[in-house]
Length: 212
Image (tube, rainbow, N blue to C red; front, side, top):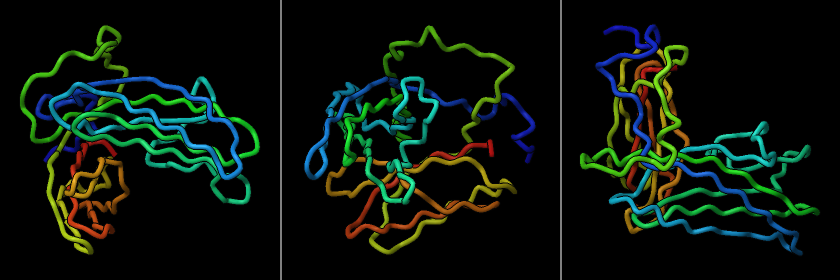
C-alpha cells in the first residue's frame, strides 16, 4: 500500500464531500445557576448529517477548538462554559451554557458530512462557490467510512493497517433515537477502537483518513 501522507491528492481516495456548512453566534447572559441557550436548525437533508467544526469566544475564532472539546476551562481547570453540537434526521442542535460571572459570546463554524450509507444526491452547499482545488493544500483523503451498532460495554475494533495513527472522526448515539455527537476513540498504527460507554445499545459512524 502506498503511503497516502506522501500525496496532496490521490484519485483512489475521495476528498470529503461537505453537504452543509453554517456559521452561528450567540450571546448567553449570566444566571444564578448558569444560563443555557439552545438553537434548533432544520437541515433539510435526507439523513442525519455528521457534524464537525470549531467554536470559540473570539469573532475570528483565533481561540478555536474542536466541537468535541466541549468545555472552555478556566485556570483552575473547572469548566464554566460548555457547548454541545448534535444532529438527528431533522435538525442540527447547538447548545451554549454560561456559568461565568459575565455574558459570553459564542462563535461556531460547522460543516456536515453525509451518512456513510447514503448514496443519493444532495443540493450544493450555500457557499460552494468559495471552494476550489489548490495544490498548495494537503487534502483529506477518505480511506474508510462505515457504521455499526454495539451493546453497552462492548468495543468495536476497525482495522486500517496504515502503519501510522490516522486522522479519524467518530459520532455516536443511542439507537432509541438520541442525537449524533462527536465522540473520542482510541487510535493506533493499525486500528481505531470505539467503546460503548452508554447504558443502551448505540449506533456509531466513523470516517478514517489517509492523513495523520
